[in-house]
Image (cartoon, rainbow, N blue to C red; front, side, top):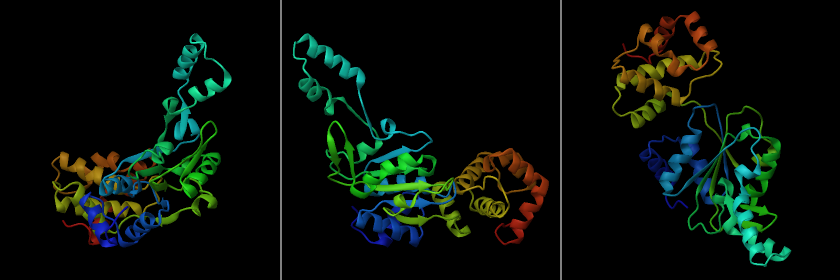
Length: 302
């Protein structure tokens, strides 16, 4: 799937504007070489979902995404039958006088009437190159759906009662993400390699900003990253991730801001903090104090 080295993989990801540290690159490299799913866990906004897009671009293949949610079922995740077309075909068979149980079953439950959802698309035997399958926020799905995934993750196959077992000729690279809103079962984790993605170091975050927003001032980016790092040390309800750092730098650049001060921070706080409680907490602590502490830490240049 990937013929280069771990360093090559890091370089190729950087070309796709994704900065991966050595640990993440090793886990991803092994997932591709061993053909094992990779379970990515970490706080929201640290780049788990973005990794899948970057990997698909590196491999020059399709990204197939399944967004998980409470109540997700087989008909939305795997497959369902096109009942309208089946009914039309049934009427055609009836009009032709060819309606018997065996004929109807053979004609109605075949590929032309099968609607392939993300999981089945990823292991489609007709696929000539392996896709990247992103199962995003698996922690939002329920226990029953987790159990359904076990066959797919272990054997890269799915059983459809009317057709039998569908098995991938070219197994996809499977990336599962979790924000830890609940614990995922050990049976699922055992089928995967595991990687925790933490908030990045300041230098790494600045490298991400430089790749994603090359037009933004390096000085402004450094100031924003340092203040965001200060915010992550507070007891916030929703801690800002890399995506919020990027949004904040982009917003400030759009306002032609060249430096951070308490006024501009106060005006743009809704870009980086997303709950009323967090906004009130920061204002109660004093925005100027947060900016000053970030400056004193050596991260912000006046």
